[in-house]
Length: 285
Image (tube, rainbow, N blue to C red):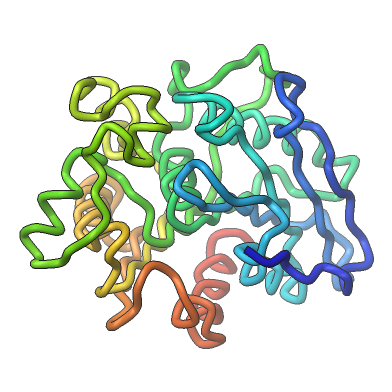
């Protein structure tokens, strides 16, 4: 995937280490030129089937639109499945959040106004961050800043997988010849480190729905109706379960008719305007 164009961003810090277990554990900080700060934060989590992707690739482009709306944008890398298996990725994301909160004053950031935003695998990690604040087994405090919490204040989940074991049946029920997820070599099996059909309890522990509680932050969830990589039922069911616990006013689910797994429909200016309106409600008030 091509790199996002960040040449126009004047104030930025690149490749800052948020932990020391792997060279992968780095993040980039971009600050807006408008406003005085401390700035609310969009934390970008890239997708790529838990195996590919990078904090500087083109998946960052829609998040960077936040710079002109007064948001700081922080893009993170995390250990991919070829380097480390579950729960390495979520440990890394949470370590990055703790680091950001600890360093907030230095970089003119507002640690009390953080949104996580990701697509696909990044959407999954954003969703899991949103529901699992305070879940000790999903954090490795030895990675640094153990005095900081990992709660966030808004979540944008674009077409993330949620319940790994249900996806193949959902495609079958929809009549879609979609990507297979329950095979021993599926991307989810590679991330977990074992065939997902053999470890149902581990898959339950990896499911963001497992941790839904009344104090979860507001969610914005979108999914293309023609997605053949992750079935739309993943987002539909997740939104329904969230609404039952945190209330319908805090959960926006917007299917995008005809859209596939990402694409121009998600990055459309009107759609992004709605997302930033959602963020403004919770991060600027």
